[in-house]
Length: 227
Image (cartoon, rainbow, N blue to C red; front, side, top):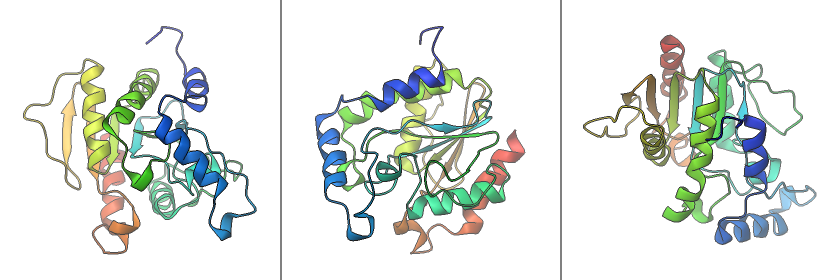
């Protein structure tokens, strides 16, 4: 990381990134062929930077934008059911000033929290390829480096958990041995960071009851207690 690196510089590089041809094609194809309910909207259709409080002590990491969520609205976890769950939980825990995230100019502000994703473009079937993941992870590593107050990383899902461990290793933090297994409310310490695991607030988990609001709240209550 350059000593002159900053959130604004990382954001500019993320938004202009075209490193992964498959993801570029997919995000733009989704914008050209939206479902009827979004037919009148202009899609962002670019990679998504992280957003939130630059002094955050909590960093929340998701998998990737949704094709008709963040890829449409231009903000991660915004405009889809997963985001509805996330921002309600952040609001209840005191990290967000409102319980919903609808679009980039909706007045949402995060306090002591920053939200990013392991992969910045919407992937087909929500499954990034290994090379696509590896192209994106340096952005997350740089964000972690410039967010100097972060103490807690919250990984939403096993993919984000594994990516977070890779980022911590690349950052030179003390390795976690043995490698911790992902589960809901899993904890792992690496250097000065506490990594918390949470089931992803996808419809697959929320509709089936695998993740409840009470269980989701417990993750952010634990993060709040740590900081």
